[in-house]
Image 1 (tube, rainbow, N blue to C red):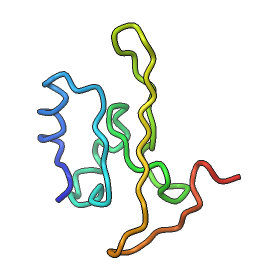
Image 2: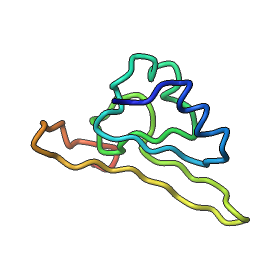
Image 3: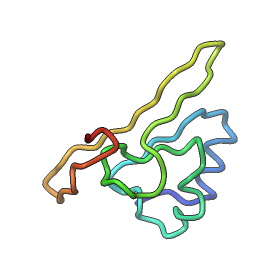
Image 4: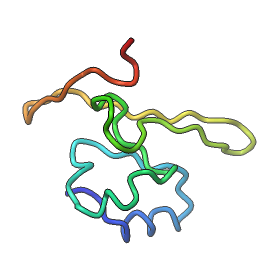
Length: 87
C-alpha cells in the first residue's frame, strides 16, 4: 500500500495533473522524498505540521481548478482533526 516515486513518476508521465493520497499515504518510506511535489495531494485534514499539502490549484484548459483531499475517520483508527481549516 502507498505509492513509490517510480509509480508516481509513471502516473505523472501519463499527463495526470494531480495525484490524491489517502489513509495509506505513508505506506512506502520513499514518500518522504517526493511528498512536497506540487502534484501530490495528501489529506488536508491531517494534523497541523504534517508534511505535504492537502490541496492544489491547477490550470486546466484555461481554467483554474482546485483539488482538495479530505479523509474521514474510519474503523482503522483516527487522527487529530485539528487541521489547516481549524481556527
